[in-house]
Length: 195
Image (cartoon, rainbow, N blue to C red):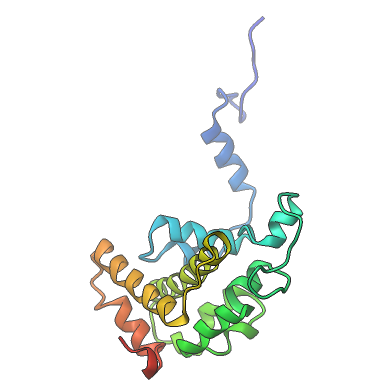
């Protein structure tokens, strides 16, 4: 007896591509995703921000929820460690936001509100997204350096690393825009952190 299972009215053979297309057609579009994917960041950094957007960043709280770790406490400051804490509210993250001139960032309800900060008005969305991605990525790397290697990365180094990432991303994409790093410096750096 032949197998007559398939997809669609014509009962085409099953493929994962067809199933994915069918499944995604049922999902409402994610309007915010454009902000994450259309920038000069490396695919790894874009995926990181996508994990944050989907609330899947492996914070202590997520790992505890998955029964991977016992505690959801921040190893640096002793607070409940979810991604909001890591990227916006942790004292280390707060110092970065203050250093780049965005002291209101820790008080945002969601990381998505970073894209609406007044400091970034006037910038094209890809530049805005690249700047935010670079800062978030370097906060995350500094957190991981401490958690896994007990290495403390100072605020000034995190900010410089974010600027260096922006330089590399500009070269990688051969962007016609003058420099993401210049945009970060123009819109974010305090005089103490000028490079």
